[in-house]
Length: 264
Image 1: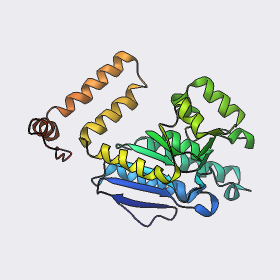
Image 2 (image 1 turned 90 degrees about the vertical axis):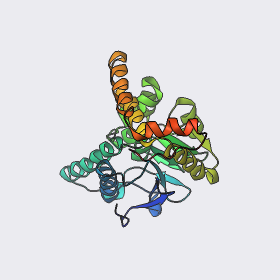
Image 3 (image 1 turned 135 degrees about the horizontal axis):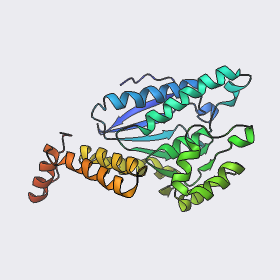
């Protein structure tokens, strides 16, 4: 995995957890073309080779912003063709993030507006600092959410609430985001990253094949009928039965020790 991205910083923690930090603090970590390319390359690479990783924590540099959305200074004066070409990068970035085999936890450390809110909503779940704020403000600019916002936000908070927020562009607080289901936990700013790393570490300590199959079963199953989802679930379950990790997990339980999962 590359470590010399222009707009993001990657750092392995405890070998199995990767912290990805959006790193444009001078512009509130706004999403420009290069950040889209960097995130796209990172997540597309992980679908091919996880390099032993079992969980990802995604956050922003600094204490004021997770990601303020699209970089409107870069977009100022863009031709229609250039705008669409840039957005194709963002679309690939989103799809690569959603396809990531391992859990992605957003640690939202400040403002998450526009594309920043869409990135958070695309994560598997969200921890947020008490000073974070959210909004999908695209309609106030004559556009609309186009990086998953109209799909992921309703799935998280429900159709009617999402329509209210997307069609008005109204900002909402961390506490509201938690109450409505977008955010799992609200934490003091100084506690946010540690809490996200703690849950990532707990996930990484579980059977990695189990976590990946369970994530896929949830994600894919929600797009199916209940009957089809149950059939998909048991297929995923049956893939785990012949694994060394399944045998190790049961043996470790009976020997009253921590299992040593190898992802095999």
